[in-house]
Length: 90
Image (cartoon, rainbow, N blue to C red; front, top):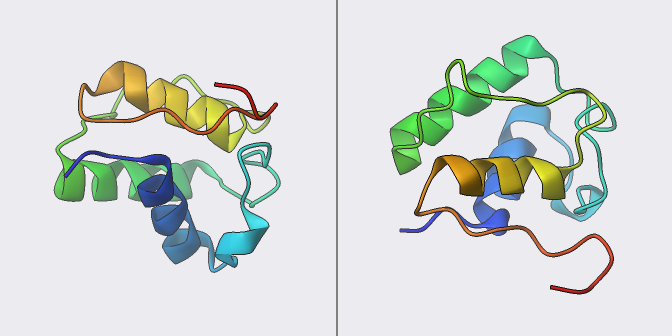
């Protein structure tokens, strides 16, 4: 199964306890309270469920948006699909 934006949001909902409707492409990792432990858990889930190995290759900051984060995943995995554009254009 390809790793899609919806999959990323679903995993973030599980990790953070936020509602799916609270996480948009423009939401930042800081907005959802992601810390280094959460990112490590997220990387482990991606590896387990989708075979994406992000350990040591995540180049994100607290200001990284979910759209940008998903684009990073797309660069790391040929099975990932980019997030919807934050501006509404592809």
